[in-house]
Length: 366
Image (cartoon, rainbow, N blue to C red):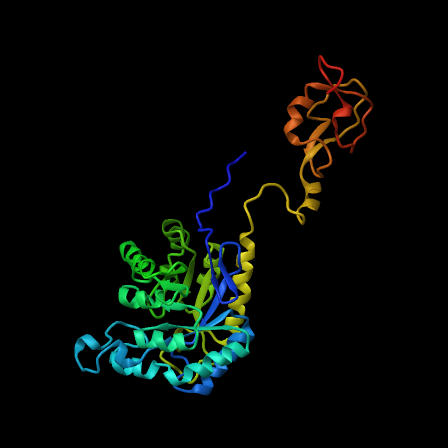
């Protein structure tokens, strides 16, 4: 018997609000609203409604001000030079445009609750953590760029809430340091997200094998934050054991926003939810032998049949016995034994062989 492969995914689970995340549970799907409100509160509500209708588990927001992230200064260091949708922009101006006003958060959280989905956020400073604590946020997400900010991680960990940490850009040492910061500050429920922090990300750089590897190395549930422009990587991640999928969502590709180039529309989000759950179910369990639906197919295996009439006492030969379909006779592995035996009675063409039809040499029966 071939040995079953060992399970290299952590068996730990994390409770977030009324959901259990981790091994043995469906993927937890997070719709990332981010900057896709475009400065329009009503649009933010439309995105929440669309996400709930698509079947997500949670909507995640980003809680920051431009001042909490960078300086309002016109120096080269503070301008985006890398290719992508934000190339040439000043950091301060981009964050100012993309920020979700703190005064929106009570109504945004209430809208999610009304629609039966979880609301939480990525805070970017202590003030944001305090604001989210006032709203009884059930968890905190550490964005991949902030995974090296141990003070921020500690501030979130001290709340006692679950932490979800994206590890895009992080080395193994930096992941260890982030976890140490979280555990030292009192965190005990942590999920890591494999992530490529390019916007948009390239599918060829998803490196999804990192999901089971991270889970094995750090013994925590691991999910995937997907910045690619389609659903392929997320679906594949679920097949590899990702317990969380995070994806940017928008109500419509127009008007554009800083994140619209790599965000899913409502129909695409609905397909993501359906396909990720299907991929999770397809993982199944390690097993041998036919499933319930396969059982009827056993009849179409090969087995040993009489292919020409055989008088009683005659020797079985390759001319009168063959391995053919269907599978009601002896297994083909017994052919060598049968070819050294005799017919126990008259046999007709088309009969499925069984041991009662066979007289083994030097034996009266089997």
